[in-house]
Image 1 (spheres, rainbow, N blue to C red):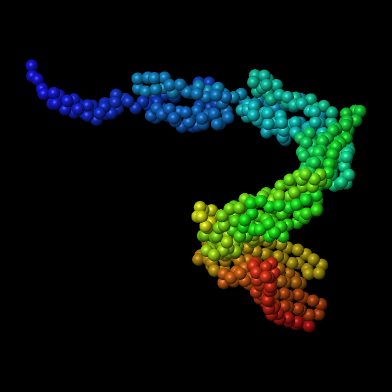
Image 2: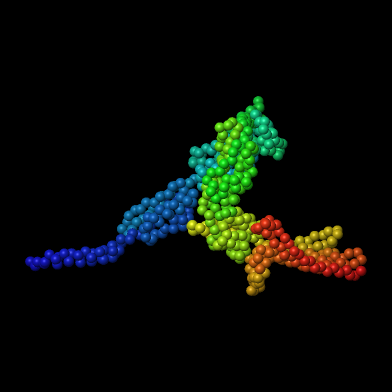
Length: 563
């Protein structure tokens, strides 16, 4: 017997193990290690076409066996809403695995019927029910339809209506039958406010959504949820007007026949509170005296929530104007030890002060960036980031009618600056084309052709006739161009208007108008022609902020002939 040194045996075993690692995958593949789907079977299908479910699962015989793909196929089957349940089983075979999908179909709606209804016609009920014959039975949709019918009855004054569906009948036959127990129709005939003295009945009625019946114009329905909301609104109204302890409740009194209802709101007004002191907390950028100067709330006056809300907005704007964009202001009422007095406290959460970084424009597909950018009167890198100006920029962009929406907001994480993003959505229609024809006793027959473009660009001429007819030129500059033709038998007019809101990219408005006018009168003909030029400026900053000025020149020629 031959013997080998121990070291050589160890080396040999290592080489054998390495060869096994390399060869094992190939041997496994040769033995069919990657299992495949040999066949797909469907069980439980009665009304559903096999081709329909096969397209949904997107799994075929011969595909590699992938349990994740099979799980996703089951999810897609359930999302169709046609099946109560779906699962699969694997049956191992020599060549791979057979996949068996086991399906439980939903029952199909065979009929939708209504029983017990007298207040509404069947066609009216069907309008609020989204279930149709042929749909799969979906109890979520059935419950939604039942709630819609109940809401319809309650809006008609049937507050005690009961709507039910026979579940067993649905499961056995597919018939969805809504049965109504209508009850008595109740109408609110009178609304009374007990305990009121500070406000008139008319003032309080404006605070509640419940209304009394009024002929065919108001049904006077009683909705308990709405009345609960009315109670909260009345209480909020009182407390917002200084009656900080006010409490409101309600009761309903039915007539003998149960059809007419008197709704009574009971008010306990309490004490009218006055302001004892106005205090500020957390303010360092402004002194308390500086903040107090701009307030509408005054010591000794009634504690009014609307004034407090206005004061909060005023303080917030002061902080935003100086770049404290993340500051927050909150107004509170703190009861004093003295009865009938309360302190008004404004809590300020100050943040860092920021300047303007870059300005980015998003959402404009055809409008030039500068048309959007110039609406924001902030200039990097020196200007403080004023959020008040951002809100004004949004307003100015919408006023151009070029954009459906506009949003200006800060982004970034720089400790001293924030970039500004102007996010806009261009209006689908930025121009109008109108044609008209009319006859008047004074002017005879008059035709009208009007072209009005709100996002015109004189510097974007068409490069081809195709660009011109498809409105791919003269667009995106923020200018206004309007042409009006009114040819007529007795009177004819022609006018052309052009507006450049930023002349040479400066905040100066330039307007040009040219017009022609002809009219045949008894004994002579009159014709006019002229041009109008104007320059205007609206002052956004400084002493004249909010003012505007304009200089204009008109040249006109008038001709009288055929006298």
